[in-house]
Structure formats: structure tokens, C-alpha cells
Image 1 (cartoon, each protein chain N blue to C red):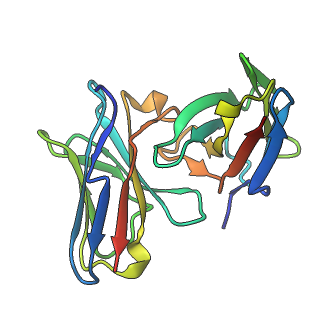
Image 2: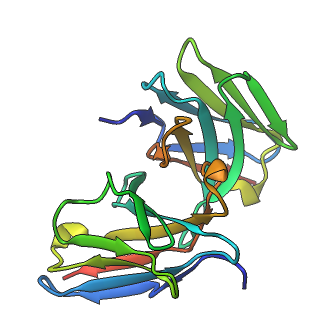
Image 3: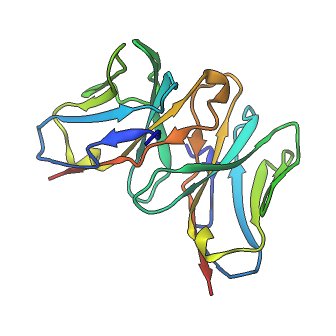
Length: 115
Length: 112
């Protein structure tokens, strides 16, 4: 499967716990984006990363959220001390280069439920 | 501050007829527009796009129209098919930005 792979597909956490969401981009893609979809809303940009670099994190909440895309391995979106308002679908997307940024390839999403 | 708006949350169309999905935007700096299609429990998939220097782009059954003066774009699907039933998101980008701004989506139901 050469598509964008996200895991876990579903994650349940209690308030105060940590959530880690992983994303492996399509083969050959070095640009990764994270988007969040709250219930009944559109997708909202969170962060744009290239290997070992955060390019744009203007959509990330200032606290509790962090993202990385190491030289080896998947991109990880980390949410510390989760709250109920973090319950959402988190989508990862990738592109081969910035010029194709508009036409992103999305994964199937990770659905976080905070109890 | 919703810069991309899809004011119709849902639309029902008979198979074979035309589906028209609308999208309005407020940011005049947007210069590239896209439509994504999303099935339940799946990620969005790119459908069609249009640059601000054009007013129409066609790809098979899908045509996107852009009216820059009205800051309005629309997606036409003709003829509509049951497999087109999905949520359609309009998205916009500026040439210098690294992120898409999405609308809230329109759920299209194509009935037999």
C-alpha cells in the first residue's frame, strides 16, 4: 500500500493522558501536513513539516501540542494532557514538494476520543 | 473567521441530474482553489482545482467555475451518480502559504 498511513485509526484516552498519532507519508514524499476536523466542521490546518524541520506551525495550539518528522520514521503528532475538546479526527497529508502543496494526499485519519 | 464558506450543509440530487455545489470566500489573496471529496471513515481525496487566472476547469463529469469578482466558485457534477454521494470540501490557498483553508463541507446525496 503506497498511500499515506496513519495509526492508530481510533484512540481513546482519558483526560490528562497523552495521545500520540503517527503518520507515514507516501513513498517519495518529504512534506507532511497535519489537519484536525472537529465534529460538524471543516478541516483546519495545524502544522507543516519537512524532514527534521517544522516549516509552519501557525495552526497548532500553543500548549500541549507538538509535532515532529524525524529523519527516520513516521511523523508524530503528540497531544499532552488531553482534554475533551481535543476529541476530533486528525488527518495527515503528504506531498512530494511544496509546489504541489494544493493537491495533498490524505491518510484515513486518526479518531481521538477523550473520555 | 471563516474565510471559506459552504453555506449548504447538504444537497440531494436525483441520479442523472446535475449537482451544483457552491463555495464563497472572503480573502482576496487566495489564488488557487480546490475541491476535495470525502467518504465516511476515509481521508479527503483531491477532485479538481482551478487557478485564479482561469474561470473554468473541466475534468470529465466535473467542472469548477470561478467568479473572482463575486468571490464565488462552484462545482458542477453532471450526470450525477450514486457513487458521487460524499461530503465535498472547497479549499483555497495563496501562492505563498503552506496550508489549505477548507470550507465546512457539503454532503451530497445522489438518489436513484
